Length: 227
Ligand SMILES: Nc1ncnc2c1ncn2[C@@H]1O[C@H](COP(=O)(O)OP(=O)(O)OP(=O)(O)O)[C@@H](O)[C@H]1O
Ligand SMILES: [Mg+2]
Image (tube, rainbow, N blue to C red):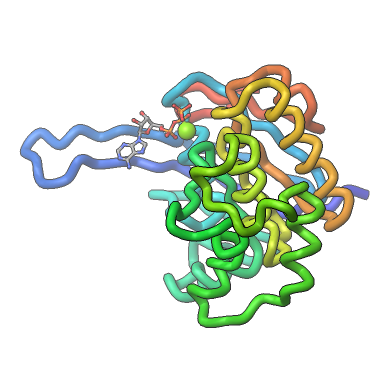
């Protein structure tokens, strides 16, 4: 029997442009209901501006919805305090972004260790080595981001997201800045990681081929899931 990891109930997100008289409102998410099953790879597609990134941010507790509930297991994360929410993010969630978001002045290894550093914790060197090896980045661990190809930068960002063994990996256009070959490589690594760690992975993508590799696809339009 499939087990549910996340249940989002009627989540909406309204962005207000504050401080202006005729403040415009954007309804980025419009009463979205969705379920995510444990261990699945779920793709989210849709046109630019349809609300994909907004949805991903809500699911990962980077931002909170204007209304609605998000259950992670039995717990409603929209009720969490800021402190509890950042703990939740740190323990359960890994994020991978299109733009890699590596720090240029840090090496590959230092970038991967950064999440721990920020928590004043020491990572297990063995874990870091294992993950860098798995992602084919072992030989580049002393390199700086500018010395890496796009694919290598993205694999470093994935290593950083994986290193605390998150239950849920949220990827926003992880292949968006990569050519076909590197995009396929990244997808292969995500599937491998799911296998090894029993992870659940959500991938936002414009790319139909990438979406087609997932177990399920949600298609968005105007802040709604239409399919
Ligand atoms: N911080 C913000 N403040 C105001 N409006 C926002 C903000 N973030 C997103 N929006 C608006 O919300 C809507 C959904 O944006 P979102 O970034 O979720 O789209 P997307 O589907 O990820 O698009 P893309 O494919 O271009 O990344 C858009 O109309 C966008 O302009
Ligand atoms: Mg986006």
